[in-house]
Length: 373
Image 1: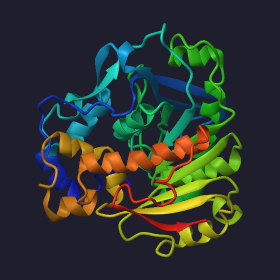
Image 2: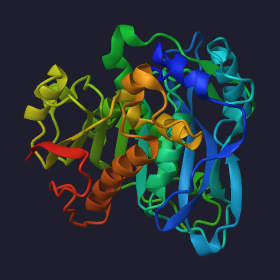
Image 3: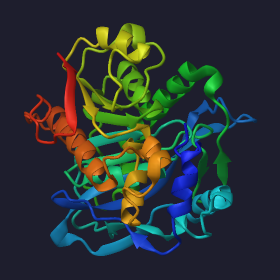
Image 4: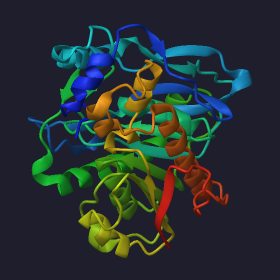
């Protein structure tokens, strides 16, 4: 479900301002470059397109760069067309023109002389949401030493804008969510195949000396993107570990399960006993598994939007409706806690590092280990 598709969006819309802001830089040992790219799967027709056409995707690639080699660059948080659509869509709710286009990420200019290949992490967004609404989160994870690739799933995302300024608007896919998750899983495998091609990797990360290693990658996603992580793992053995951030499970993984490590992050009050799909899937996750619950959070906490609110100076000032959507934890704190768990999981899966955090150590009082094996 799109983040803004609720009455609570009225509250957020009322506080957003058009003044230019830069989101906080990532806090890891690296900053990042950012590249966006169109990928076309000529072997597969888009099942949602009104005419026969190959499935085309947009991706964002965040790649680490040592701070000492970073030439600072402010990168727009959204492309102009997506930003303009968001402004127009929510103008009746009080959003001034230019709001979404005024937000920037603090990134680095591409530096071919310093480019390196890092372990790859894939991200899939929630249903109805653009990958762009998770860019700050992806950048923060990347700053820990990972190439993070976020994927837009056309006709599922509310809008996808391509380099030639053509767009695909979202449609209602909820009649067959299992099918939608399967399509998303195919998108993920296609992206991995493309990343392994030197002709593609050189465009995504100019200067990288070899093709990217996709033989062992990890994945995380929010809402339907979390379900996508699990289903993609089932279908593609290159994905050695996954995270579901607050999403119900769908498709065949519910019955078939996974033998590889999987972690679930949930908002306050949700656990493996409150969601039937979680109860069923938990039983067939036979490898390492954890389910953590974030106190003071809601479903929208696992996006960039609480951070946007905080950056605009309105953290904690949204009232009951805003709290019901974003939680009460606060945007900066939420981003720190969530990405710390994602980072440690990636370190565990891709670097072989043990994590006391993932074993339940109370580094962050807001996070509780509800279930494990």
